[in-house]
Image (cartoon, protein in one colour):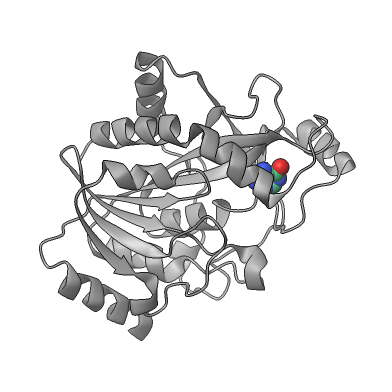
Length: 270
Ligand code: HPA
């Protein structure tokens, strides 16, 4: 374990000595409402944790929230650092490994994304069944040993995907499965790029999640990821794309999305 990771784990253990988190969660834009579902919440600011991102993006809080959702003990990373901020694809490495070290065997990733499928209009939810790492950047560059050659088949756990889909179905919430394509950003895509991505088999496009999935798979965690569609991708609607628009659209459905996520977490097998 690196010194940064050890320090972060020590601080979390000192602040939350009783916490035994099983499920780690990363909240992206539009998913902040999940915090309201956490019982016995305990907060640790990223600023107090070595190796955690110390500057955020609008819409992200920058703290670890420890507590319980149903009978599941959770550790929620409220706010992520994106690779587009300074080019660092390992930005979430220490936070994710710290939660793994505390006992989390499952990681739930959430994000806001642009939809490439007209059957998923803004406000829709999509469970990732695969991803396309378009930038072909990896948070594992520089690692050594055979374990760095991570198998990415079924990177998004089939059992967790089935749980999420069945919870949505029972709740009367339409949710599809699809492929998420990662763009480095921060600029939105061109119309020609989106046309190409559709031909490549992408259903959604976004600027996060993929490096975190790779880190989590390397650490042996099962991954579930859900996208909240905040817009149709470039050229697919009359809307102009902007971060403010993303946040406004995300805010519209945050309550439904967060309720669904809380219900899914309650059903994740320990
Ligand atoms: N493209 C990339 N990232 C996004 C989008 C988009 O259209 N919407 C929300 N995040």
